[in-house]
Image (spheres, rainbow, N blue to C red):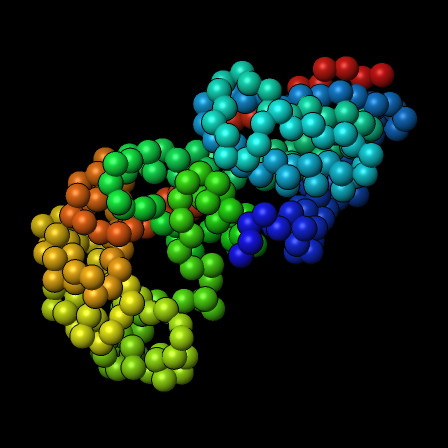
Length: 284
Protein backbone atom coordinates (compact mmCIF):
# COMPACT_ATOMS: atom_id res chain seq x y z
CA UNK A 1 0.00 0.00 0.00
CA UNK A 2 1.33 3.43 -0.99
CA UNK A 3 -0.04 5.45 1.88
CA UNK A 4 0.48 8.75 0.06
CA UNK A 5 -2.23 7.67 -2.38
CA UNK A 6 -4.81 6.71 0.24
CA UNK A 7 -6.84 9.92 -0.13
CA UNK A 8 -7.41 9.20 -3.82
CA UNK A 9 -8.85 5.72 -3.35
CA UNK A 10 -12.50 5.24 -4.49
CA UNK A 11 -13.29 3.16 -1.39
CA UNK A 12 -12.62 6.19 0.80
CA UNK A 13 -15.29 8.19 -1.02
CA UNK A 14 -17.72 5.31 -0.51
CA UNK A 15 -16.82 5.10 3.18
CA UNK A 16 -17.36 8.83 3.70
CA UNK A 17 -20.65 8.76 1.82
CA UNK A 18 -21.89 5.90 3.98
CA UNK A 19 -20.82 7.66 7.17
CA UNK A 20 -22.55 10.89 6.20
CA UNK A 21 -25.70 9.06 5.10
CA UNK A 22 -25.81 7.23 8.43
CA UNK A 23 -25.54 10.51 10.35
CA UNK A 24 -27.67 12.83 8.21
CA UNK A 25 -30.44 10.45 7.19
CA UNK A 26 -33.34 12.54 5.87
CA UNK A 27 -31.69 15.80 6.92
CA UNK A 28 -29.94 17.72 9.69
CA UNK A 29 -33.08 19.01 11.40
CA UNK A 30 -31.21 21.26 13.81
CA UNK A 31 -28.90 23.00 11.37
CA UNK A 32 -31.53 23.31 8.63
CA UNK A 33 -33.89 24.95 11.12
CA UNK A 34 -31.56 27.55 12.56
CA UNK A 35 -29.06 28.34 9.77
CA UNK A 36 -30.04 29.98 6.48
CA UNK A 37 -28.82 27.93 3.51
CA UNK A 38 -26.92 30.90 2.08
CA UNK A 39 -24.96 31.77 5.22
CA UNK A 40 -21.24 31.13 5.40
CA UNK A 41 -19.01 30.45 8.36
CA UNK A 42 -15.44 30.30 9.53
CA UNK A 43 -14.49 27.59 12.00
CA UNK A 44 -11.37 26.15 13.61
CA UNK A 45 -10.35 22.73 14.82
CA UNK A 46 -8.56 23.05 18.13
CA UNK A 47 -6.60 20.31 19.89
CA UNK A 48 -7.62 19.63 23.49
CA UNK A 49 -4.57 17.49 24.31
CA UNK A 50 -0.98 16.75 23.31
CA UNK A 51 -0.34 14.07 20.71
CA UNK A 52 0.08 13.08 17.07
CA UNK A 53 -2.36 14.19 14.39
CA UNK A 54 -3.49 11.84 11.61
CA UNK A 55 -6.22 11.82 9.00
CA UNK A 56 -6.40 15.48 8.05
CA UNK A 57 -7.00 14.59 4.43
CA UNK A 58 -9.99 12.50 5.45
CA UNK A 59 -11.43 15.40 7.41
CA UNK A 60 -11.08 17.66 4.39
CA UNK A 61 -12.83 15.16 2.12
CA UNK A 62 -15.79 14.89 4.51
CA UNK A 63 -16.45 18.64 4.44
CA UNK A 64 -15.94 18.92 0.71
CA UNK A 65 -18.33 16.04 0.15
CA UNK A 66 -21.11 18.38 1.32
CA UNK A 67 -19.67 21.55 -0.19
CA UNK A 68 -17.01 21.31 -2.88
CA UNK A 69 -16.15 24.98 -2.30
CA UNK A 70 -15.24 24.53 1.38
CA UNK A 71 -11.82 26.05 2.06
CA UNK A 72 -9.86 23.68 4.31
CA UNK A 73 -6.54 25.06 5.58
CA UNK A 74 -4.48 22.65 7.68
CA UNK A 75 -2.18 24.32 10.18
CA UNK A 76 -0.09 21.19 10.62
CA UNK A 77 0.37 17.86 8.82
CA UNK A 78 -0.17 14.19 9.53
CA UNK A 79 2.50 12.83 11.85
CA UNK A 80 3.14 16.16 13.56
CA UNK A 81 3.23 16.47 17.32
CA UNK A 82 0.65 19.00 18.48
CA UNK A 83 -0.11 20.53 21.84
CA UNK A 84 -3.22 21.30 23.86
CA UNK A 85 -4.83 24.46 22.49
CA UNK A 86 -3.11 24.35 19.12
CA UNK A 87 -5.16 25.14 16.00
CA UNK A 88 -5.13 22.07 13.76
CA UNK A 89 -7.06 23.44 10.79
CA UNK A 90 -9.46 26.19 9.73
CA UNK A 91 -12.59 25.69 7.64
CA UNK A 92 -14.50 28.31 5.67
CA UNK A 93 -17.56 27.96 3.47
CA UNK A 94 -21.25 27.10 3.62
CA UNK A 95 -22.31 27.24 7.27
CA UNK A 96 -24.74 24.36 7.00
CA UNK A 97 -22.09 22.09 5.46
CA UNK A 98 -19.57 22.97 8.16
CA UNK A 99 -22.03 22.17 10.95
CA UNK A 100 -23.52 19.06 9.36
CA UNK A 101 -20.17 17.46 8.46
CA UNK A 102 -18.58 18.26 11.81
CA UNK A 103 -19.22 15.03 13.71
CA UNK A 104 -18.38 12.63 10.89
CA UNK A 105 -15.16 14.50 10.07
CA UNK A 106 -14.15 14.58 13.73
CA UNK A 107 -15.01 10.91 14.23
CA UNK A 108 -12.55 9.90 11.53
CA UNK A 109 -9.75 12.24 12.55
CA UNK A 110 -10.15 11.74 16.30
CA UNK A 111 -9.93 7.96 15.92
CA UNK A 112 -6.95 8.12 13.57
CA UNK A 113 -5.13 10.65 15.75
CA UNK A 114 -5.83 8.53 18.82
CA UNK A 115 -4.23 5.54 17.12
CA UNK A 116 -1.25 7.61 15.95
CA UNK A 117 -0.78 9.07 19.43
CA UNK A 118 -0.90 5.67 21.14
CA UNK A 119 1.49 4.23 18.58
CA UNK A 120 3.94 7.08 19.10
CA UNK A 121 3.82 6.56 22.86
CA UNK A 122 4.64 2.88 22.40
CA UNK A 123 7.37 3.57 19.84
CA UNK A 124 8.96 6.14 22.14
CA UNK A 125 9.31 3.47 24.83
CA UNK A 126 11.47 1.43 22.45
CA UNK A 127 13.86 4.21 21.46
CA UNK A 128 17.44 3.02 21.60
CA UNK A 129 16.49 -0.57 20.86
CA UNK A 130 16.22 -2.33 17.50
CA UNK A 131 12.69 -3.60 18.26
CA UNK A 132 9.79 -2.12 16.30
CA UNK A 133 6.07 -1.81 17.04
CA UNK A 134 3.66 -3.76 14.82
CA UNK A 135 -0.08 -3.45 14.45
CA UNK A 136 -2.59 -6.30 14.03
CA UNK A 137 -5.83 -7.04 12.16
CA UNK A 138 -7.85 -6.05 15.24
CA UNK A 139 -9.39 -3.07 13.49
CA UNK A 140 -12.93 -1.75 13.04
CA UNK A 141 -14.53 -3.47 10.03
CA UNK A 142 -14.38 -1.10 7.08
CA UNK A 143 -11.70 1.08 8.69
CA UNK A 144 -8.75 -1.31 8.26
CA UNK A 145 -6.69 0.88 5.96
CA UNK A 146 -7.38 4.10 7.86
CA UNK A 147 -6.42 2.39 11.13
CA UNK A 148 -3.20 1.05 9.64
CA UNK A 149 -2.40 4.38 8.01
CA UNK A 150 -2.71 5.95 11.48
CA UNK A 151 -0.33 3.37 12.97
CA UNK A 152 2.22 4.15 10.27
CA UNK A 153 1.74 7.88 10.88
CA UNK A 154 2.46 7.37 14.57
CA UNK A 155 5.76 5.63 13.91
CA UNK A 156 4.68 1.98 13.96
CA UNK A 157 4.92 -0.66 11.27
CA UNK A 158 2.11 -2.49 9.54
CA UNK A 159 2.04 -6.26 9.96
CA UNK A 160 -0.14 -7.72 7.21
CA UNK A 161 -2.96 -5.69 5.71
CA UNK A 162 -5.23 -8.72 5.47
CA UNK A 163 -5.33 -12.45 4.91
CA UNK A 164 -4.05 -12.05 1.36
CA UNK A 165 -0.57 -10.58 1.73
CA UNK A 166 1.10 -12.89 4.26
CA UNK A 167 0.51 -16.34 5.72
CA UNK A 168 0.15 -16.52 9.50
CA UNK A 169 -0.13 -20.08 10.80
CA UNK A 170 -2.01 -19.92 14.09
CA UNK A 171 -3.05 -22.60 16.56
CA UNK A 172 -6.19 -23.61 14.68
CA UNK A 173 -4.34 -23.80 11.36
CA UNK A 174 -1.76 -26.06 12.99
CA UNK A 175 -4.50 -28.35 14.26
CA UNK A 176 -6.24 -28.39 10.89
CA UNK A 177 -3.00 -29.21 9.05
CA UNK A 178 -1.79 -31.81 11.55
CA UNK A 179 1.19 -29.85 12.81
CA UNK A 180 3.50 -26.92 12.13
CA UNK A 181 5.63 -28.69 9.54
CA UNK A 182 2.80 -29.90 7.30
CA UNK A 183 1.13 -26.47 7.59
CA UNK A 184 4.25 -24.69 6.34
CA UNK A 185 4.77 -27.29 3.60
CA UNK A 186 1.22 -26.93 2.33
CA UNK A 187 1.50 -23.13 2.18
CA UNK A 188 4.83 -23.34 0.34
CA UNK A 189 3.25 -25.74 -2.14
CA UNK A 190 0.22 -23.50 -2.64
CA UNK A 191 2.11 -20.19 -2.81
CA UNK A 192 5.93 -20.50 -2.97
CA UNK A 193 6.65 -16.77 -2.61
CA UNK A 194 4.36 -15.76 0.26
CA UNK A 195 5.99 -14.85 3.56
CA UNK A 196 5.11 -17.36 6.28
CA UNK A 197 4.87 -16.65 10.01
CA UNK A 198 4.16 -19.37 12.57
CA UNK A 199 2.61 -18.81 15.99
CA UNK A 200 4.43 -20.66 18.77
CA UNK A 201 3.91 -20.96 22.52
CA UNK A 202 6.71 -23.34 23.54
CA UNK A 203 10.38 -23.83 22.74
CA UNK A 204 9.59 -27.16 21.06
CA UNK A 205 7.20 -25.38 18.71
CA UNK A 206 9.87 -22.75 18.06
CA UNK A 207 12.32 -25.47 17.01
CA UNK A 208 9.76 -27.08 14.70
CA UNK A 209 8.92 -23.72 13.10
CA UNK A 210 12.61 -23.00 12.47
CA UNK A 211 13.20 -26.48 11.02
CA UNK A 212 10.12 -26.09 8.81
CA UNK A 213 11.60 -22.94 7.30
CA UNK A 214 9.25 -20.27 8.66
CA UNK A 215 10.24 -16.74 7.70
CA UNK A 216 8.93 -15.23 10.92
CA UNK A 217 8.10 -16.76 14.28
CA UNK A 218 5.56 -15.37 16.69
CA UNK A 219 6.37 -15.88 20.36
CA UNK A 220 2.88 -15.84 21.77
CA UNK A 221 2.19 -15.21 25.46
CA UNK A 222 5.66 -16.33 26.52
CA UNK A 223 7.29 -15.04 29.67
CA UNK A 224 10.43 -12.99 29.17
CA UNK A 225 12.81 -15.78 30.14
CA UNK A 226 11.32 -18.22 27.65
CA UNK A 227 11.21 -15.52 25.01
CA UNK A 228 14.90 -14.78 25.45
CA UNK A 229 15.73 -18.47 25.03
CA UNK A 230 13.56 -18.64 21.93
CA UNK A 231 15.27 -15.65 20.35
CA UNK A 232 18.64 -17.24 21.05
CA UNK A 233 17.63 -20.52 19.40
CA UNK A 234 16.16 -18.79 16.36
CA UNK A 235 19.15 -16.53 15.81
CA UNK A 236 19.24 -15.22 12.24
CA UNK A 237 17.13 -18.06 10.85
CA UNK A 238 13.87 -16.12 11.09
CA UNK A 239 12.42 -12.82 12.24
CA UNK A 240 10.77 -12.78 15.64
CA UNK A 241 7.56 -11.19 16.89
CA UNK A 242 6.46 -10.99 20.52
CA UNK A 243 2.69 -11.06 21.00
CA UNK A 244 0.14 -11.25 23.79
CA UNK A 245 -0.55 -8.85 26.68
CA UNK A 246 1.94 -6.29 25.44
CA UNK A 247 1.31 -3.35 27.76
CA UNK A 248 3.36 -0.17 27.88
CA UNK A 249 4.90 -1.25 31.18
CA UNK A 250 6.25 -4.45 29.65
CA UNK A 251 7.52 -3.24 26.29
CA UNK A 252 11.06 -2.37 27.30
CA UNK A 253 11.67 -5.68 29.04
CA UNK A 254 10.33 -7.58 26.04
CA UNK A 255 12.55 -5.58 23.68
CA UNK A 256 15.56 -6.53 25.80
CA UNK A 257 14.95 -10.20 24.93
CA UNK A 258 16.11 -9.34 21.42
CA UNK A 259 12.85 -9.74 19.48
CA UNK A 260 12.58 -7.90 16.19
CA UNK A 261 8.97 -6.82 16.62
CA UNK A 262 6.31 -6.42 19.27
CA UNK A 263 2.70 -6.53 18.05
CA UNK A 264 0.14 -4.53 20.01
CA UNK A 265 -3.54 -5.14 19.27
CA UNK A 266 -4.56 -2.31 21.61
CA UNK A 267 -3.25 0.24 19.10
CA UNK A 268 -6.46 -0.25 17.14
CA UNK A 269 -8.91 -2.44 19.05
CA UNK A 270 -9.35 -0.18 22.07
CA UNK A 271 -8.14 3.23 20.97
CA UNK A 272 -9.04 6.38 22.90
CA UNK A 273 -10.26 9.09 20.53
CA UNK A 274 -8.04 12.16 20.36
CA UNK A 275 -9.79 15.21 21.79
CA UNK A 276 -10.50 17.83 19.13
CA UNK A 277 -13.05 20.64 19.29
CA UNK A 278 -14.66 22.42 16.32
CA UNK A 279 -15.40 26.02 17.14
CA UNK A 280 -17.38 28.39 14.90
CA UNK A 281 -15.54 31.71 14.84
CA UNK A 282 -17.88 33.67 12.56
CA UNK A 283 -21.11 33.28 10.60
CA UNK A 284 -21.74 35.85 7.86
